[in-house]
Image 1 (tube, rainbow over the protein chains, first blue to last red):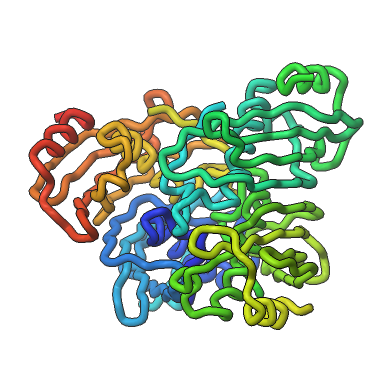
Image 2 (cartoon, rainbow over the protein chains, first blue to last red; image 1 turned 180 degrees about the vertical axis):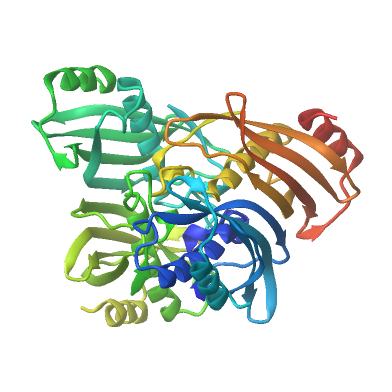
Length: 125
Length: 125
Length: 125
Length: 125
């Protein structure tokens, strides 16, 4: 997924404000979830972020065209983990390990086998 | 209401990103609505912005301590208008005329006389 | 310009937070300015928003694919005005009249004839 | 440091959007840095986030009055680490380990002994 850095993403140090990288990788996850289900919320289940490990390797600036790459690194019964990276060309800007918990009817719940398969298909094995 | 400019509010031009002044005046309105009702959403009614006229007079920067001033300028049956200004000391940074529509059970609805009185009390006559 | 509504854009009323429409139309302007000049800031000039008239016609929600449309409505010596609209399919969500002032070396300055021509070309006459 | 949850902080799941907790703890750091130096950028040095470990324990919602608590956990020659937590009353909402690198004249640089002392004073031992 490609995304552009706009003024809203930068701060007065002239670079992308650090918290906004979390928005960028969330957009990538949402596009994947939109592909899984037409209506992610209407479908009565969703995934919430439980933990994250983040590394800020380099800075991106206004106008940069970034690329996010996401891959599944662990599937558990009621949660899974993704490695998500942001690149500017071949330069790594930001990397994250994101643990996502499955919520159904407002509570943590086991992920259905079909959903597991589809997550694996969307985010790679 | 006093508020501080943080990195999140600025952009790469070194000043507050223009759309963030709308967040600042919304915080001031929300504090007023929180004072009107303990639970603004639970109360089953709220106000949505229908239109705005904005003037960007000067820029604010990181660390500035701004002040918002809000006053009622017109009360109508199902909506009302506020003048909201943001100052840095005595310097006007930003001014807005904000038209707010009353929504009850998901639809525009007349504002109850008690609510009108309380709005007048909170935002001046 | 097409843009997707992500979680970051919504608020607890379930719709796009009103100030975020300003981000959407700013992205459209920035793409146009990026097309005008490879490095909009390095080029030593830029445009700042001086005033805005906004109408919030309908709400957009998570996952919606919106489209922005921008056109030049008035060119002046040191500023110009755009009409910018956001549509969901054929439904008008939001419309704005945006007055932009030309800043060169930190001060308001006349817009060069070539820049006027290019703005007219990018935003239509 | 106390902070209120406004509409801008929430998303369509009705809770605080996860990336916004990073804004909250950054505000707490900035207040501390503002206290260290009147003009943090003018002073020609600042701290950038190099890495973060985040745990999202509970959700906060519109109107909640949150409190951030920050304490120094490790001081190194050119960087230091803080533990930062967000509470709603006595309930832990969010916790982070934040590694901050010292940047002077655009490059990583050793932290002066006086600055170390002042950081220790501001963030606890």
